[in-house]
Length: 534
Image (cartoon, rainbow, N blue to C red; front, side, top):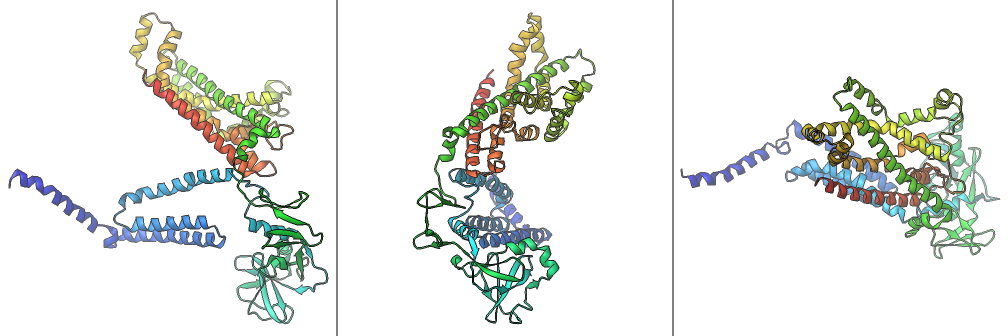
């Protein structure tokens, strides 16, 4: 056999080898591995089908479509012999899309809407809610003896007998005929439901009293409601909705309400019906913080404090960590390992727990600082705006210096000793050695970590929320925000704690935070690249 023939052999060998791998595939040979994969995929498909059914039931078509695609792709990837890399990449890509890309896109969408309290859903839901909130009992209508029912899922329903026909309806389901025996007044037995007795009705009293069963699919027909779980009466809204004209009319006063571009039905004299619905408001949420005089002042104070807090948090912790690292890097210090172990102890405790401990210690009346160390003084550490900011910086210094101490210690030990020794032989002072040799070499390694630390402290929600809760609060602001709030804690307050939840405004501020952090990180890493040339 010639050398040329030998060189032509490997491709055929590789082909035969590849075929051998395919033959060994669990998908072909039905090994235990194949059945294990089959069982796992069966569970995944079961959850997927449940999610599809749930999203279809509530009309969440975007979720339905995305989930359907995810399930189909998962089955193709894990049962195909041509998608081996996909088997490893698919879970990560799915989580990336779900928790990163989808969240970013949805936050961007919400930031351009009026989504929040009073504008939570669609126009159809708002119409239904307005009609139900304005219901009154229709005087003169007969009462219906009711049977209080509970289905297999624990949902309460009403059963009535109308002209000898048994009917059942629930909160979101209008009355419908059902084949169930009755005694002419009440249903006596019914499949799929449990007829509740007095004790069971008493246990579900609030749910029974608040239940509203639509009489038909037309919301203008009203609904059945009860106050004693014995008889139900027809309640009808004083408002009527004319779908052809898209107008809501008060049948008692004749006032008409027309839809506005703000997502509300509004009368000619400016009266609004609540709730409204979600509409596109453009860049209003972004400009509101700068143009609304009640918000712009607190917002700019919070914006400046966020940068100051992030900068001082990094600067103070790095300075203290470096100073301690220089001291305990000196071979003349005895017991360095012991002292180093003590210094990293604050790093071992959870940050939010330490913040809560410090909150108690800084309490103005009962805290350890005032009571013991300051001998009963009444220093408002957390209630005065400036002292609260000072306390936050000091507590963050306690929490953050061990991290800086560790990275500085590691970096100092990587600096060649002969370089430092040469500088000392040439007569350089300790300060000159630190400024001209140690710091430049140190920054090459630590600058990226300082940038990431700045970004972390820019969004250090846990410390602010646990220590001061953002307070003391600004007076006159429509939002529950305070002097020590940073942008991320402000977002939380706007979204969840300020009475009226404003998700659109909170999303807009979140995007501003993303832009700030992105610009800072980009500038920082450009500077780091310059340091690498030293």
